[in-house]
Image (cartoon, rainbow, N blue to C red; front, top):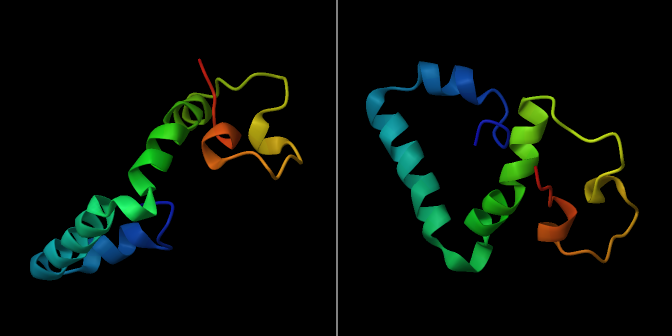
Length: 81
């Protein structure tokens, strides 16, 4: 969510508690929808996220850097530590 919504930290800090609850409830409801595959995609990108956060990326190219546009999202962001 922090990456997907510009200025989210400031926005959340300035929201009233009621508006913040509505905001998070909207996100929860979208995550529950299985047709959008958001949770599956977040899980697929989890290892890559942690590798980037801890500066633990390999020297070789990652699938996300390749020009193979026919790869499914889960393979593009795959990374095994």
